[in-house]
Image (tube, rainbow, N blue to C red; front, top):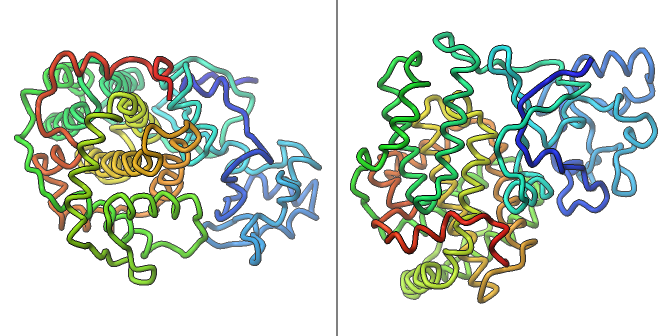
Length: 412
């Protein structure tokens, strides 16, 4: 019997690219195997147990130590899928990049930007991040329930959808929207959760009155790159050629160098003037075309987190601050990519930048290091975060009117 759920609209057009994927999930990750699928192997296909081991999780698929691919990966495709069918794929492999969560008796599905095809559909497709009803014959054997005790399913969905709608607001650029969302998250924490369905919409509509004056810091662009390098240094070593290209573009654009061993950042007398020129070109030449992409990116982050009830961090404000730092990092990386191409890059290059960052950042296991770095730089404070994401001044009505146009209207 098919199960009904709420899914992101863009998923209607999603299909795995298989051997055409530029950055397959079959490489570099310990894909989990759920106990239900393992039991199926034991009963119906015991030969598949040779591909199962332990590692990042209690049960994972083995990877070839020479290639870092899953041992069942062959000819650009999954050997289990080809020989046994999708019923023999564990939940992680069957559903990825989809993410499925529960809000009480409601099931919500979206997908991660760590997949290149999801990035294309979510950020450049026509369907977007709105919810649509869908039916699935299979759901993950274990679904985490994010519903707070103080809310029912409909109330929680109301809050989640209010944030999604606010993230796509057409009255302001995404830099301002990002600042608004953080201000509202901070305000909601002071209220009983039972009042969130009524309060969220009101606060989001009046968020500009809650914004702290921005406190810019000239070191922020360099600290963003340094923070990313610090997280990479602490992560398990793994080849990340697409991310390394993204970082290399950022280094060149800022006239800095990252030590390949320590990830220390080395600036030059040209670094700050380079950033000033880069920022000027962003505002004059590239922002209008790319801010709709950032708006979709922001919606995607809220969707994958099932915000404000889930996400990377322990509280709505903390989670939104982390999203804000990532927003600023993506914005800087897109600016650097524009500089590398001396103009708006092809869509595939924009996908590469965003997906490479997402593949790393969206799969960090613990927020502790991220939060310690962001606290040290002051980015957890509303005034500093507002400046970091780029909301340093009010935009004219003429400017903001263009930012809300759909991505399809921009010829990138």
